[in-house]
Length: 216
Image 1 (cartoon, rainbow, N blue to C red):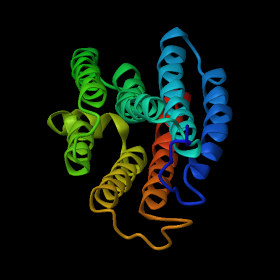
Image 2: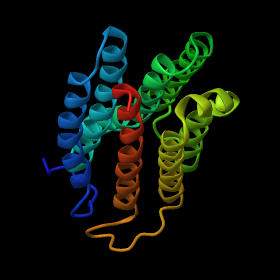
Image 3: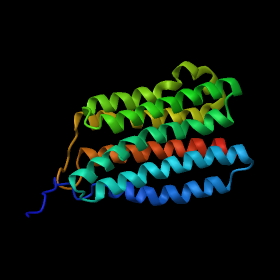
C-alpha cells in the first residue's frame, strides 16, 4: 500500500511554539513557586498549565506529520487549547484582583465560554478560519462589560500589558483568517507570523499576570 501523502509544511512550522513550550514550563514553574498562599498558588498553577498546554499541543501538532485521523484529533486539541489559555489568563485576575462578587461572575462566564469554545473546536473542527478567529476574539473580549472594575484593579502598567497582548492576539487572528502576509511559504509563512504574534502576546500577558501573582 502506498504511503498516505502529507500536506507540505513550511520548514519552521511549529518551531517557535516548541521553544515557547520549554520557556513556558520554566517560567510557569517559577511563577507557581513564587506564589504565596493557597489561592494564589491555584490561580498561578491554572494559568501556567494553560500556557504550557497551548504551546506544547501546538508544537506537537504542527511539527509532526500526522496520519489523517490523528491529525484531526490533534487539530481539535490545538484549537481547544486556545480557549483554555484565554480562560487560564483570566483566572488570576478574577481570583486575586477583582472584588469577589465580580470576580466569581466573570470567572464563571469565562470558563463557560471556554467550554463552549472547546465544544466548537471538537465538534466543528472544520469551521472556516474567519469563524474561528471571530470566536477567539469575541471570547477574549468578555471582560469589556467588567472593564471599569478590571481596569481599576489592574492599574496602569498591567492594564497596558493586557491591552497590548490582546491587540497582538487580535492582529494574529486577522493574519490567521486572511492568510496574509505569507512572506516565505516554504519556510516561514502566514501561520508562522500568527504563531510569532501569539508568543509576543503571551509574553505581555505573562508579565502582567506575574505582577498580579507576585504582588509587584
